[in-house]
Image 1 (cartoon, helix red, strand yellow):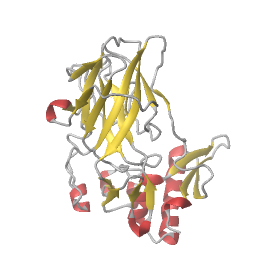
Image 2 (cartoon, rainbow, N blue to C red):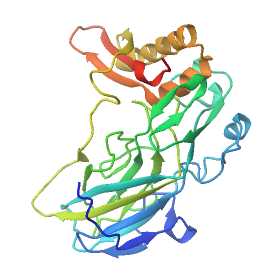
Image 3 (cartoon, rainbow, N blue to C red):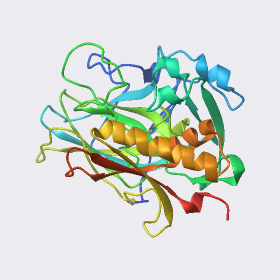
Image 4 (tube, rainbow, N blue to C red):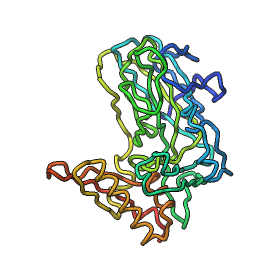
Length: 319
């Protein structure tokens, strides 16, 4: 990443720069040349329905229509179907707060809805380096956009919730400052949008939210004519673990004849561990897992059972 850049354009989070669907008929709010830099102001994933004073009741009663406000789209001059759009993320700036919440189990959201009858919410105070949790637990900040993508070629409006060939809601925790996202271009101009920013997130975003936060995203664009990809790819400047690989950690395993069940068990066992050993409620433990857990597919060759392992670093807890 080069620190020597100049922001050519700024897009505010005003309504005229926000959309809530992937749709190649949406006119670009800005057209840039390859090499130019744009600073996007992004709303939080729930489009401003929550504030730093919100409660669990507020979270349970949010509307999901619309959800995922996206800033853009930005057209990149010269981008044509078959090209690859390179998006270099130069900088992220949070606004001092974020939230993580889970819905009542009957709504079916998250990895473990069957374990949580009632919903919950935690509002985080974000410092320069860490997000502050209960019991003096500190989660290292890891700012990235949950959504970055370009318009699909298929006409009409498409939901932002599922990721797709052209990117979108991928929640790639490694798209931190200095990283580059490569997206297959399907329409002229590419039509890039971003949003759903996270101040940190554990693998899987298991309770359905990371540390959701309004944020500024600064990115530089390039059009690659000599590269061809079928789905998004990335180069990351950071470690592909959430902490230093040398950090001590505690792990729980999930073993089952499906990877999804194995993952559920690994996370559920970690929640039980945090409840027993770290004096957290199960709800607090679920939130912490969604913000800081590392999930690894440890073994897929021991049929009929597979192993998933969940890790939390010792370093986030007070000594």
